[in-house]
Length: 464
Image (cartoon, rainbow, N blue to C red):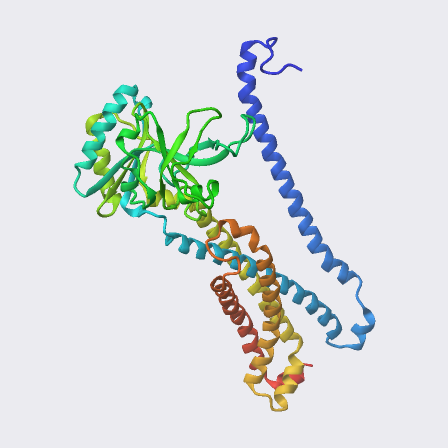
């Protein structure tokens, strides 16, 4: 009953028990997962092996004796195989549509207007405490670093902020608005935001709709001011101007007055709806900051020189992160990209299995209908007629599975709608998936159909 934290345990036992317990837990989890996978694989093998065995152990002798070629049993076997092929086609089309939706979303997301040009914006994240700086030395460093960055060729604007748009770290604020909450126990409105300097809106080329941007003197002004996005203004002050409205970031705290409204831009993800976002003046006494630098050309090419300029001030300087806004957008889009690859790969695999199954069913059907095909050809049927007959049989299965899969994909589209940049029933995605399915299905049908068209009528009749 003793645990590692019990004082009755000697220290050396506690020191050895903790890592040992971790190893034991890992081994047990690994063994449990292996055992579960083994049981599932065994059960699957028994189930799918037992069904044919049971069918073989209980043959229907009367139809077998009446029919020399076993047509009755063949038809029953074909019906079961047909259903399996239809199910395979349905699953493959669902996965193909899912992969196509993700791929289309990724293409559309790359073209979304973020409200700024991500290819011309570089960022350099710094935590000066990590580099041994206090607030006073940090302020001096940030000022000198800004001057060096602004002097670089091709640099058009430099800004310092607490959070870069699309970065993974979030700055949340609780907002109290007079007349909306009545006491400190009421929940504040939660909104995202950042502390920014007076160059922020120019650096990102954000357009002001009302009022003005932040100014250098706003940092130390007795009246605290803020700039909000259109979405925030319309949400909390609908049907009226947000200019000169006030809010607080704590109950009973000093108010902030809105002096500007900026056009909505993407701050969390490239695919977000218009997001309420708050901009407050960045204090001088800060040890954490993100430089955002707008360049005339591609920011990625200038990034090494920017890092070099800051390291010229401190050779031992360590960055939290550096990159371009395009890279941040790509990171935010990684789940969609990964899902597109994963779902698409599974879709192609399922389609391959469906194609093999379709080939097997049609090939088996042709082998069982050799006599019928021979009679048709003896009566004057041409090779093209036979080919169309066989292909039509296979394509009927494909159409049935495709329609079932399309209906399922449309019903499940709402599950993916939150991460899609296109409609869950995007026509282009459905058309692409059906195009791939049709090509594979025709290839799987063509080979048995071609073999059927080459049957020699005399040989077919003689063999029966």
